[in-house]
Length: 105
Image 1 (tube, helix red, strand yellow):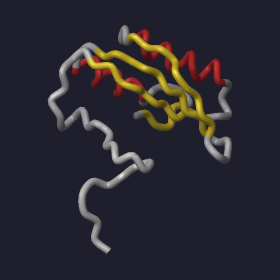
Image 2 (tube, rainbow, N blue to C red; image 1 turned 180 degrees about the horizontal axis):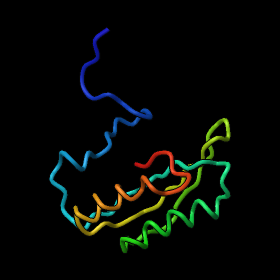
Image 3 (cartoon, helix red, strand yellow; image 1 turned 60 degrees about the vertical axis):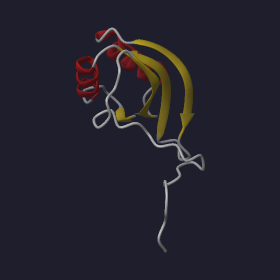
Image 4 (cartoon, one colour; image 1 turned 180 degrees about the vertical axis):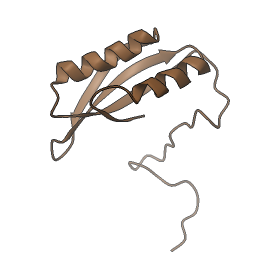
């Protein structure tokens, strides 16, 4: 079977932005989602993320938390503002060092 048009995700047809391929005008505000190890205390996970945001002077506000169906992972959603491409690249590179972080969008 051949599909035509946009591939739908979550039934709403929105595609995630690819900041590496698009021209992005900074500052930019977007929802940042971090998938964390659920076996680590929520406060510790949130503190690790806050330290990463603060290291790069990223304005952030917590918006949501969800636990995976098996309870292995927890996702935290923040509304963040990043002021430059350099900060974006350095921030995402730094995220690789955050304890308990499995994936970030």
